Amino acid sequence: MARRKVAILISGRGSNMAALIEAARATDYPAEIALVLANRPDAQGLDRAREDGIGTAVVNSREHKSREAFDAALDTTLKSAGIELVCLAGFMRVLTADFVNAWRDRLINIHPSLLPLFPGLETHAKAIAAGVKIHGCTVHLVRAEVDSGPIIMQAAVPVLLGDTPDTLAERVLTAEHRIYPLALSMVADDSIRIVDERVVVDDPPQETPAQTVISPLFG
Ligand code: GRF
Image (cartoon, rainbow, N blue to C red; front, side, top):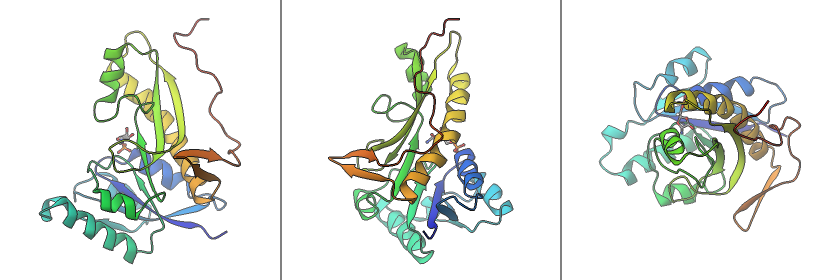
């Protein structure tokens, strides 16, 4: 099967972008990272993408008067690069329903919580404040409502005594880097189907996260 052409949309450091780039180096990975696009010219991830020889683009959100105009420019850039799948990776822009619908089931996001818990920002602080003992991250298909849509994959990590939002974010980020490439490969090789707005996996990848996470840990 031909490798699917993927664009990664970033706003900042791009560590998830780097994990996707790394995974796509494997010749049997079903997607190639054809473009890294940022909505700000100073997004740090752009340098890393350039170092890796990946095409980059900036669609500067400050240069567009409305969300509609920005999203139209985004769409044009993606289409002219022949992009088939789009991965949001720390992309700090809310996309219009028109854009989301145009890319339906080809637009993927990673969110640092076990959705539907803690949509929005500062998820790690929210998890600590809620006293949950297990937290994590979610890769999902994007729907118009922010941080919603069919869930492709999740990973759970324990919340430890004494965690701060930063220490918890670091633990979750490690899990993010593991599941985003797995989830993208499942979309790219068509091994998922969406039934009643839920993802059904026909052929789960070999490497699956641990089956049970119990927290607090005893032992
Ligand atoms: C990640 O935690 C991601 O889940 C969230 O924003 C953060 C981006 O980090 N959407 P990075 O730019 O991928 O390092």
